[in-house]
Image: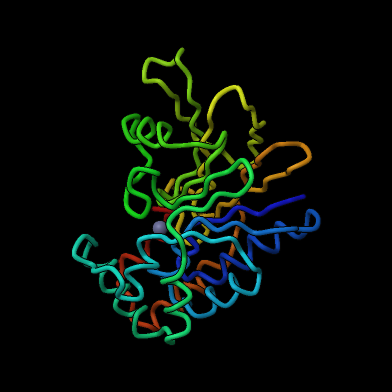
Length: 247
Ligand code: ZN
């Protein structure tokens, strides 16, 4: 089976379609796993929810999915993110809001745990620091976990030989990670709809269950098309500009 692993679509339909097209151009996609933040920041929350539902994607909730329905307040959001969350709330139908509100914070699928942030604070915590990585790994019951939220592709390996108890590696386009049950592993496929590692191309990963590998991919998409829709929706300037910068 080939499973497309997506995170942080952020209402960017052009980016979502680009990664799905890329994934399908290489063979059949049997399933889609989505690590949260389907909405927020971007101009097409309804279209992205519809697409994710149509794909039957196994999806966990992100902070923007909660804020975009009002289920969670925006006090901890920066002003641009809060504005975009309020705009999103005004777009969604009650049915779409119910869909987002029903998304679980953590999902278990085979040998994988799926969560947006970390297993310590599923919706909110960024898995950036060694401390957060250790706290996450301590709570990880399965050999492998998949996280999003940082919008940066990353591999975390647990290991007593590392001074910090684990080590973190940035994943470049084309990097293939071989799964191993000798140590717990965490993979972040990067962000589809708002990459933040300086590379504006959409990021996602393919899990090949036969090879037992996860491969990171970067895909170009029509950034200007998404930016035009954001202009028309009067979304905050910085949110429009950052797409072209990958920040
Ligand atoms: Zn996000």
